Length: 159
Image (cartoon, rainbow, N blue to C red; front, side):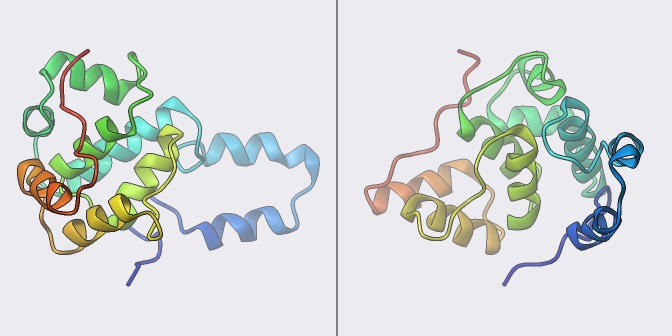
């Protein structure tokens, strides 16, 4: 079961849709400025969302980087988007380390520019079940993926 976007640092999509419903073209810039942290595709929105979500769980960023398998330097470069990755698993690893829910992880993936976890994709389905059961240990998740012959989460290296 999925939860609506109503966590800290988020505005429900329905609320944003209502704002756009009767908006005039000249009002769009103001909307984008006022809602930039909620709108996908901006570097700031990803960083703000990750920082706010991780903080709400009482986890330190340095612990997230370490648990994800990244150096603090590399992890912060990913979070601030000083270094861009095309490896979706790196963002998944950060989200797992931050104990994100399914909805939170999907939002982070979308804000970074990746596809959300997809229930019809066997590997993603396995990840979803682990997350929904609060299994965030990457080694345990990789064991579950391996049992099913699915691709393991990529290593948390800086390469």
